[in-house]
Structure formats: structure tokens, C-alpha cells
Amino acid sequence: MSGDSGLSSAEVALGFLEEAEPWRLLSPQFPSKVGGKPAWLSQTGLPSLPGLECEICRLPMAFLLQVYAPISGQDRSFHRTLFLFCCKTHECYTCNDSRCMKVIRSQLPRRNEFYPYEPPAEDEPPSDPEPDHSVSSVSGVKLCWVCGCPGNKACSRCHTVTYCGKHHQTLHWKHTHKRECCSQEAPIVTTSTFLFPESELVTEPEEEDTEDAEDEDEESVDCPSLADTLAETDLEEMAMHETEDNKVLQRFKKRIAPEPHQVLRYDRGGSPLWVSSQHVPSDQDIPPCTCGAKRTFEFQVMPQLLNSLCVDSTGASIDWGTLAVYACSASCNNDDQYCPEFIWKQDFSSDQHTQIKPT
Image (cartoon, one colour):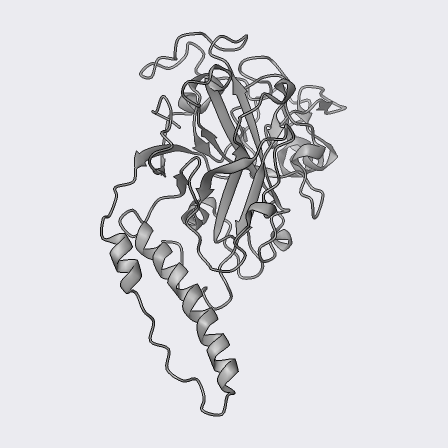
């Protein structure tokens, strides 16, 4: 991730949002970031439109975030980034349904055709401070004006703007392009409202709390009788479920309390910090990679990120308790194509929404 030469699997790294100069969030800087357009790593084998469609509504998804996570000692993964996309249709966000999200992985060896062998300078911007976002900053691949994904569908009138498909072409036409098409003046609006607000993701190691394990064992929940008329077996079943769910939530809240603004937890090969005892995946729920290798946990997105996305609404809304990303344990090359990985969306249980809100 940004500012790190690699992330150790022996410790949890916490991700926080920071403002950054635009040039720091471009592909040659190998950024970790949230929002804006994706800063593609490999400039070949980019995902096609169907690969970035919501499995529920079939509309193009929006780029949510990317995590730069090279693997030390593995040359094919000297540069390695995971990209997360999500649907912007609020109705697609039903409880514990991950079909509205996708994650893909890209990696390159240190010596590759796109980037210099030596790392980029951190304190000086590139010579061209105003990059053309209609094409890749490295390879010249045409990108969609709206979302930044590969797009070869050009406007039939001006032929200067390209899109990933008809949906985003229509979106741009209605928003601003109808007024700007074939105009000699520079466009007033240079970014799409489809995008999430852009920030850099920076990391810090999580400080260990030696009292956690002892305190977890001592935690108890006082559950008074709900009604004397309830059957004893019903009471026991309800109490066991509520107590276990509450314990998991309290453990989650206590773990994040020292750093309440964390939006991401990176712990490759570790375990997610769940928000609920319900809808926790078993090993069989995590499919293997297309290469046959087992997928292991890599990072999770926290509910605190929702605060920065400007997605709140009174009805249905983009929402999650936590998003757990699992990636190929071998970090295979996938024939030099962007490789789909696996994401598990866990929501707060219905009775937990009153107990926790992103801060």
C-alpha cells in the first residue's frame, strides 16, 4: 500500500484516508486509494465490460478502491494490486448478498514493459501535471470517460470521448456532453458524478493490545427474562443467539476503538474481524482460484468507509457491515490477465443496527 515497499503478513495494517495531490494517485506511483477512476497496474489484459457488471442489475459497477500489496520474495508479484468495484444501484444491496461487488487482481514483475525498474520519486510530480484521463497514462489504452474502465465506444458526433458501453454514454450525454459535444471550448466538467470521492489510502501497523484475549474471556452479557410466558426452550435459543451475536459485535467494536477512523484492515493469510456471528463463511464457501490454488483472506473493508462515499439515503442504500476479500494463495499470473478474486459481504444483523453506526 501507499508508502510501503510491502505489507508483512505477520501484522495487521490499518488503512486510513488522506488527501493527496492528483499525480500521486496515478498508475506510475503504484497507489492505494479510494474513489476516482482506477489506476490500472498492468496495461494489458484489462477486464472487459461483462467482467465489471453487477450480477444483479447487470449495470456497470463503480470503482470503489484499490490496494497495492506486493509479495516480498516473489518476483512475479513485485508489483501487485487488488481492485474492488461495487454497484451503485441501491436496490442491489440486500442482506449478505455479495453479487453487487467484484474484486480483481493484477501483478507484474519488477522488470516489465510499463514501468521503470527503479521506484518512482515520491517528492516530485511527473513532468506532465495534467494527464489525459481518456487514455491510460502508461499504455494509451482508451478508457471510459465516466468510470475509467476500458472503453472503445466513441461518441458518434465528436469521436473524441469514449465509453465502456451505452449506459455510461447515455449518462454522460444527459449530464454534460449534450452541451459540450463538438464545442471548441474546453469542457467545464472534467470528472463524472458517477465516481466516488477520491482519497489516498495510507497504512499504519495496528498496535497490539495484550489485554484483548483476557477481556474477551471475561465478557458477559446480562440478558433479563423477556417474558415469563415464553417457552423455556425458546428463551434459551434466543438468549444463545443474541449473546453470541452481541459478543462478536462487542469484540469488533473494542478492536477498532483505538483507531475508530480505520477504513481497511490488511492481514494477508490472517482472519477477518467479523461484525456478526451470522453469515460467516466456511472453508467450503471460499472457492479456489481458477489456477486451482486455495484462496486466503487478504483484507477487509470497514463500515467507516461509507461515511466518505456520500451514499446515505433514507431508503435503500449502499451498505455493508464488512467486506472480506480473499485472493489466490499462490498469486498466480492468470495468463497475464486481470484475475477475478472472491469477496464476501457480511451485513449487521437486524438487531445490531441500533448498536453500532460508522463514526
